[in-house]
Picture 1 (cartoon, rainbow, N blue to C red):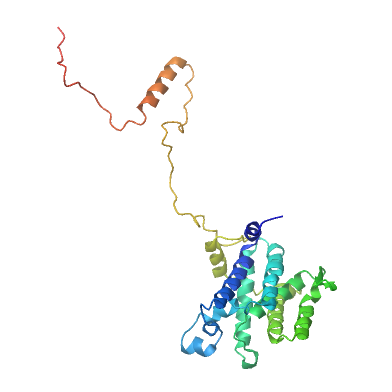
Picture 2: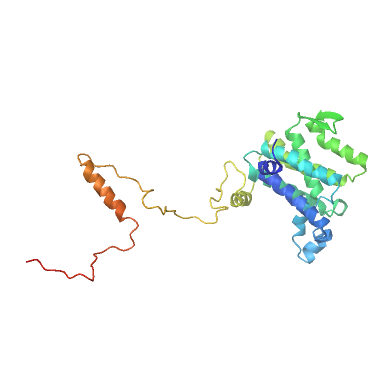
Length: 288
């Protein structure tokens, strides 16, 4: 059985990053480190006060610590990870673009006053559920150990559960709409003979390559090989010539002569100054 640390390191990068960001956002709210209204989606503040961060931060707040919050984190850890390891395996940039497109779609829908919500993270998580159900339509799942059904019906079963528990249905429906738009443009429309119009933009490929996490097949950009490296240079061994390559003796040469040359070379290593030495207390006698 793996430890929590091993399980955390085994998670794919995108789902792990988003789940941790949502957890830290709620933890900071629990510690009264910020006011949720400062990160909520208010278009008046975005356009009149240029508080651009609201377009991003509203997706990371999934509510206070509660059972619905824990359930949404489980969705990210289970269905988001399943997507990233399955249909999006070695397609990290495409998976990031799925999140970007879903967020842009939800922001567009939130511009309609009747569809607006201060935090769109719940809808983004529900979009993951919908896309997972379309990618794994025949997978068998169990709802609270009571009902077993196919993966295709999972988003509709969760929608029914929110209706029974009295939770608002608008975030779920918006997530279904955003997920269906993405799945239609990337899968259904191309399969029907249409043009693939939702290609992952180059800036997303470049962002993932700069990030250095995950892997994208046929990416126009290579991952930064120096990511996470604090110092790069040539290393030397300080223990003399232990790391030097020995030159084999030439054909016909004397082994004894070769050994003598190697000993002279080894003796010369590590000398900081080389020259002729004289003793100052001895007079040099000229030869007769």
